[in-house]
Image 1 (cartoon, helix red, strand yellow):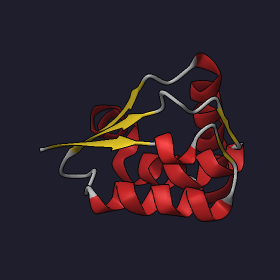
Image 2 (cartoon, rainbow, N blue to C red; image 1 turned 60 degrees about the horizontal axis):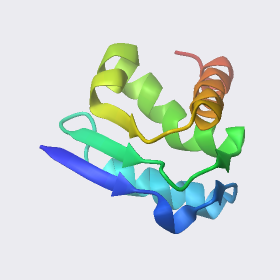
Image 3 (cartoon, rainbow, N blue to C red; image 1 turned 30 degrees about the horizontal axis):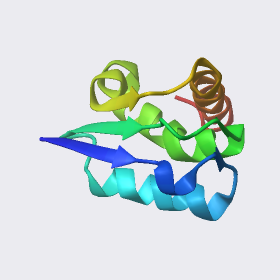
Image 4 (tube, rainbow, N blue to C red; image 1 turned 180 degrees about the horizontal axis):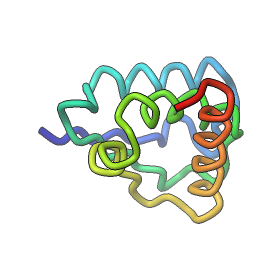
Length: 98
């Protein structure tokens, strides 16, 4: 099954831990280990690396790189936000291991 999540409600910047935790829980509720989760970043212009680490780091470690790429799909994400996501994942792995 495919789930579509819009981040419009968090636009334009995802920087607060509470909001990052809400997004994390929304993605968890979609069971990304079993389903495809498409996340629409169309109105997101930036996010903190801390938010990216919190939201995506755990999924990257749990799912592994291949399954993460297959089950967590970024839609309408700018190059800058994508870079921040990759940096957040890298920080998560360096902190918690892989």
